[in-house]
Length: 142
Image 1 (cartoon, rainbow, N blue to C red):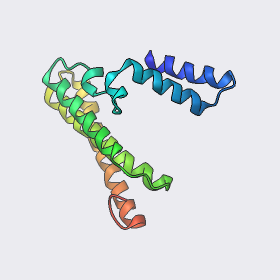
Image 2: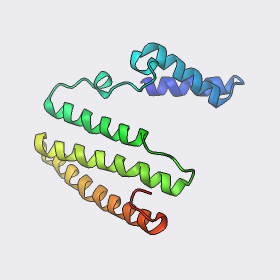
Image 3: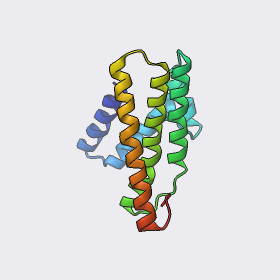
Image 4: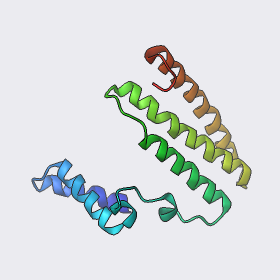
């Protein structure tokens, strides 16, 4: 719901003669005013947006926070291909980490099957991206 409201405000601002950049800036200012963590200059902790009700929840929150920290610390180069792969690797790794948490804690066989499939597919794609980064950029991290 918040995403739709935020996007609606951005689109409305642009339609009323403002720029999208201005609307995004205004949306960020409003978000900061309503969230002390964002107002301090950082993003809201996953713990504040996804309240952990179990150890599995806490583990998934940590996987997401680790991914966010990794992606936030990545230096963008302006090379869309390289930057895409470097950003997708931690994203895929977070999916693998959360799928492993599902395998340890989940109950439903269909969801566990999905988790296995995610692990297999994302691991293959990480390996492929590392290979291309080495081949095209000289190292696996770009």
